Each structure stands twice: as structure tokens, then as C-alpha cells.
Length: 355
Ligand SMILES: *[C@@H]1O[C@H](CO)[C@@H](O)[C@H](O)[C@H]1NC(C)=O
Ligand SMILES: *[C@@H]1O[C@H](CO)[C@@H](O)[C@H](O)[C@H]1NC(C)=O
Ligand SMILES: *[C@@H]1O[C@H](CO)[C@@H](O)[C@H](O)[C@H]1NC(C)=O
Ligand SMILES: *[C@@H]1O[C@H](CO)[C@@H](O)[C@H](O)[C@H]1NC(C)=O
Ligand SMILES: *[C@@H]1O[C@H](CO)[C@@H](O)[C@H](O)[C@H]1NC(C)=O
Ligand SMILES: *[C@@H]1O[C@H](CO)[C@@H](O)[C@H](O)[C@H]1NC(C)=O
Image (cartoon, rainbow, N blue to C red; front, top):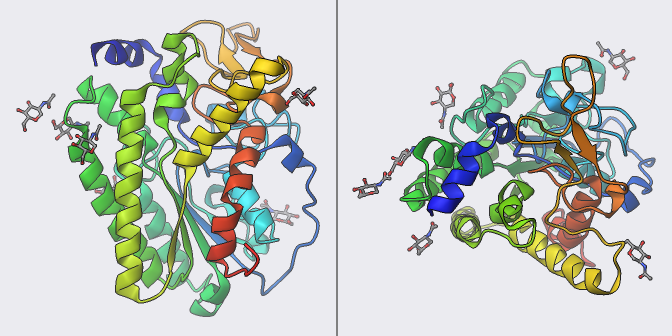
């Protein structure tokens, strides 16, 4: 316990800003062309940096090298390219919904993204809207009749949060002691949030289970990127199990499948295992537990520059072979790999038969 604590605490506080996103290089090549227009499916997104596509203005995600793989410049995504939201939108054959902070009345037809990097189910060390406040913003748009019940007939919500709540707990309390108390209150609040989104009119809601937080490079660095931190992974596992249970309960109460989980926990673990295995035979495959982009030393982070504008970060040669882009966020390649594993869940959510 002590060892983990020390490592986390000596990391620059900025790093906790970074719990959020992903996508993939092969994915970058996918066609994003066939969009419907007016009465298209809409996607509404709530949560943290793993699904934020630009709401955290003035954050590191708006500095190079974020966005280098796609679209070639920073767009406020905590990634070198596309993140989970973008892939879910492509699955629905729509454009990625506009970030709430950049909302533009001519671009409302694909829904809206309320997710904000660094935030959680409760308040975190980042001064941004927690999930309840994000849902408040959504509710206001409904009151203003920007969206109506009619719009929601074929709408989907994507919800992903929790990582930053755990990071906040550990940074404030200094250890994982009694963390299961937090898990219980997070799940309770998440359950209220999910019911609220449904009561506002959305009938299909995809919820990300918690990624294995012990595998993010911020925590694997202490083993020279060789091993995930199993104590932290147990937190994710418990969280994911409880979340799965309440989702099943909620569906039972509703008498229909409104809620569907996206198993980020097992997707990440399976991708890590596959990459580790193929690395034995193929040295081009990157160590999945190592970030592509990182600060030169602990004072710096991906995207840092000094007073004179000189780069204070290093970048791997081929981001398209990495799983993690920075110390907490998957690369586009990573998100694409995760998306591939989530396809059958997404298919079930929208009622596709052949999945
Ligand atoms: C809104 O979107 C339209 C078309 O997508 C674009 O031409 C316009 O510049 C945007 N306005 C703002 C304020 O971003
Ligand atoms: C969310 O943030 C608001 C504003 O800071 C706060 O009043 C509210 O209690 C928070 N909600 C939760 C569930 O923590
Ligand atoms: C610290 O731990 C206690 C339980 O031991 C919990 O009540 C409190 O909320 C924790 N602090 C944070 C910031 O989560
Ligand atoms: C954990 O919970 C126990 C029992 O509630 C309490 O005595 C202890 O102080 C807590 N530890 C921390 C670090 O909050
Ligand atoms: C995980 O769940 C088990 C059983 O519910 C519990 O005893 C344990 O304290 C939890 N561990 C963590 C890290 O949450
Ligand atoms: C080695 O791995 C890279 C990156 O995943 C891949 O592009 C390449 O085709 C692999 N080479 C062989 C011989 O499998």
C-alpha cells in the first residue's frame, strides 16, 4: 500500500487532470462519410476525458502533440486522434456530437457531448462539471426545447466516469484504505444519474465499466512499465462488478433493456495480454504498458514546453503501435482496439441482429 501511495503523491498534480480518452489508427482509415442528416440518431455523452471531445478548454489536450494522428492538430481530445466517443458515433453512422463548450446551433443534429476531462461522478480536484452538473446542462437544453422527446426516439447516451473519483480519493487520503466505501457511494450516485438520463427521455444508454486503472502508465511506471498494479485493478474490478449488478437490476425494474455495459475492464486486459504475447515474437509491437508521449522528467508531462518554448516531452516513433498515448489515456490505436471488442455490445444496444 505504502509503495503505491508514494508514487502517486510524487507525481505532478497535473497528471490527475488526465484521466479520460482513446481511438485507433486503422480506425482512422475507416470511412466517416455516410452520415444521415436531420432526423438522424443522436448521441449524448456524459463523463470524463475518456469520452470528452473538446470541452476542457485551455487544457493540455488543446496543445500539440495532442491530435497529431488525427486530425493533425489538437482538438481538445486527450489522445493523438479519435476517442471512444468518435468510434461509437461512427458505429451509429453519425458525426461525432458537438462538444457542449463549442455548441453551435447549426450542428445539433448528432446530439451533444457534455463530458469534461478530469471530472467524476462526484467533484474531483479538477474544477469542472461533475456528471450531475453535465446532466443539468442537458436538462436545460430540453427545457429550452433545443431537443424534444421526439428527438430521443432513436437517441443513445454514452456514459463513462469513475477513474477521476478514485484518483481524487487516493491523492487526498494517501492510500487505498477503505476505498470500497467510495465504490458503494459512486455506484449509488451513478444509479441515480442513469435513471435521470432515462427519465429525461433516452431509452438506450451505454455505460463504460471502469478500465483497469492499475494498468495506466502512471501506475505501471514504478515497475518500469512491466506490470499492472493489482491492488488498483481490484478497485476497478469491484467497481465494474457492482456497476454491472445495478445495471441488471435497473433493466429488470424497467422490464426492458434500457442499459447496456461496455466492458472496458476486460477489453483493456485482453488487449494488453495480446500485445504482450505478440511482442515476444515481434519487436515492432510496443509495450502496451508504456505511454507513447511523456514528460522528460516528473516536472513535465506530454505537451510540456519550457519558458523558451522548447519541448520537454518525448514522443514514441509510431503512436499507431501504442496502446497508451499519455500516462493515463489510450492512443487512437488503443481506442480502436477497444472499440473492436465492444462491437457486439454496441450492436445489442441498438438492436442489431447479427452480433
Ligand atoms: C457553426 O457551424 C457552421 C457549419 O458547421 C460553421 O460554418 C460556423 O462557422 C460555426 N459557427 C461557430 C460560431 O462555430
Ligand atoms: C456536483 O457539483 C455541484 C456543484 O459543485 C454540487 O453542488 C453537487 O453536490 C455535485 N454533485 C455530486 C453528486 O457530487
Ligand atoms: C477518505 O476516506 C474516507 C473513508 O475512510 C472517506 O470518507 C473520504 O471520503 C475519503 N476522502 C476522499 C477525498 O475521498
Ligand atoms: C477506515 O475505516 C475505519 C473504520 O471505519 C477507520 O477506523 C479508519 O480510520 C479508516 N481509515 C482511513 C485511512 O480513513
Ligand atoms: C472488493 O470487494 C470485496 C468483496 O465485496 C471487498 O471485500 C474488498 O474490500 C473490495 N476491495 C476493494 C479494493 O474495493
Ligand atoms: C509486427 O507488428 C507490427 C505492429 O503491430 C505489424 O504492423 C507487423 O505487421 C508485425 N510483423 C509481423 C512479421 O508480424
